[in-house]
Length: 301
Image (tube, rainbow, N blue to C red; front, side, top):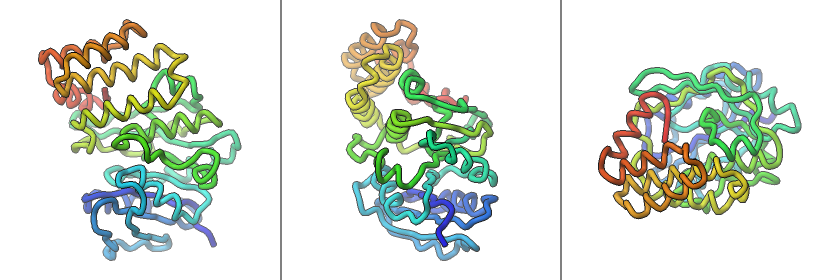
């Protein structure tokens, strides 16, 4: 018998959070059994002998590809034995009905990626974010649609190994790999979502990317160059340019912040990130302070 879904959890130095994520997968209300592949990236492989998988299958492996989240996820994808692959970040968790509610979406051949709504737990409390039922490429170019979180992603294994392709390991620092995957998925089909907040996203602790501003600059610049659709959307282009400007401001690179803010405002004068970038670059307010304030409200830059 084959597992119903292979759940790939990439992890690094988060032993307790990892176990919480695994327990939420083991608690899924599904008829078949699940395969959980935990990929250790840059840290020793923990056999997780203290975690009893019950009727499910638990495997622990080392990342054998490019160091980082993209390579770790691809290691898990290539090891998967199920016809569908789901991602769960090691610091997030699922509600028990997540997979059972989501799997029927893949019965539609036009759907390439299925997601769910999310509940963000931040220092400011609990925030529910509801994604559109269906998202197309134009929608994702205009907006990242952050309600589509990678810890909710479910895809067909043969798509990831074939027409869609693996997670992009060339993306600098791996920043934006989930957005890149969404854009590529929407290019060949639809992104569908269950609106219910069945994925719990924890913003009540520091992210690996919270203050890695140069990585954000490099990753977003790569995405602008990689995806030609941005050339046809001034609004979408301005959004990314504004994020790059903000990161430059946080780095203290005022000239670069001005340059990218100017690009963003030429494309869309309503782009608030450009104005925030100039404020950060002029030291009127700090980048981390803005990020913390937004995250407390379940938002990001």
